[in-house]
Length: 349
Length: 285
Image 1: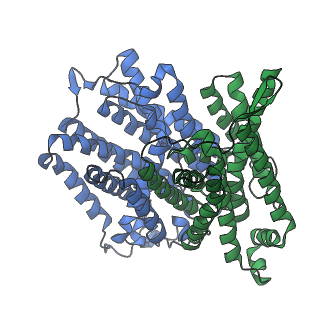
Image 2: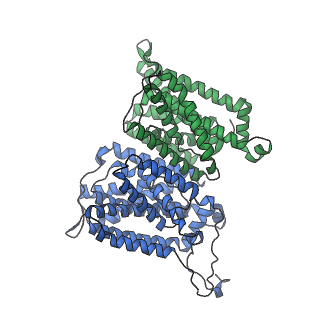
């Protein structure tokens, strides 16, 4: 989306005095967090379970926002990491009987990371820089292939996937769906969110944003463009893996769709709709789409996907920066990076 | 020996189907530089038009003749109203056409429900040579594919209209300065690509039957074929489609179908990685 606004003006790396600009972004973030914390008190039980699923999808959407919104890598195969991690932890729980949260979540994270490193390494690294089209097609194909493999592999349960995964446990306590799972997911989401926020506002994040705006220029500055991309792609894969393992234990089963093209493109919809490149936009987009989808699914199940398509088209045509751009200025969306030098040491830094 | 010929015929006819589907995709990608994610849905629409005409009581072949015109007209309207805004940014074009495809697919799904609807072949029976039977309809598909391929090639390489298309591809600014309306050319090219997809859908619906995700299956295959062949020329996508179609049809005879299906894609992606320009590099026809 950012390609339509090629000349985004970066703010000068100077803070004049100590006056602070009125910031909208932290307010949005705090409001969203407050709503998320209070939600289980007002929702019915089955809605809390639904809300937990939405939070997990938010985590998944964050991973896509990192690669597309910050590094400009169009990944149409983010579900590969989501799904393989889900399958991985499901197998660990089924065949090894390990359900301890302290083992399965890191395992899911590692699986997502490893697959992203493999796929990203192959697609992004190499002597010739890969074209954007090639990367998006490669990830899309990866997603399709993973889906096909899972469907055809008897060990993975074929079409039916792996049913009745035992719940995650902490010591002797089983973490089952409900408020406990909700708050645990919220905690993880918050931690990952803060980590991502720190990352994209660091100097590394500045290099990434430069990559997204003008890759060639960043390469001329001497950055290892492809390596930067592979790093953020693997990191995002780890986040997707974490989301996938949470999802597997929450739903209690995994099935081939988790890896497939449908979920891969769904996460693209979430992020584009909410607004890519803001992190909170990914969360808002996911919540908005899932909430409306839940609301409409009873009465208008058939036409909802059509409405979704039309909405997406309208957003792409008229609001390329997503819903969030209605209240967030372009300047703040791009934001500041790293430690700001004081006015005095401008020349030295 | 007989089995070998039957297998070869199967491979050839499936390869022809892939070529037919990819041709429209390839022309749009090569001549306009955008990857049209709605192409699979144009195939679906072609199949749907054929089904509608058939269920209205008319002969199937009338639907098959009508399909490319109907889909081409829709393609033209979509290009004029929406797709033209995307030319500046290829990724946005992918997403935008994906959204278009989503809308078309879900509308068709709503219209036909989750059903698999069958459309009879307009030409049933088979051609027998010795003890071997070849489905006549598949023979017709091979024949029409060959004709369409030759026709498209002649259109692009030998006519004044084709020259304008190629001029608009290679140097839009110069083409405009020479008095060619690139806008109109892009509209016509997109409509032509859509019409080819509509024709493909109409021809293959008796073989695959009609269901909402019909196009999705061919979309990824088509893109991979275009990339393998090489974007930018006419021959590239056709060659790529031939390779992918042949592999996709031939490998299941040797190894389990699921592995074969995945292997084709993996091999194709590896090939593109190490030869990004594709089998046939260069622009033009």
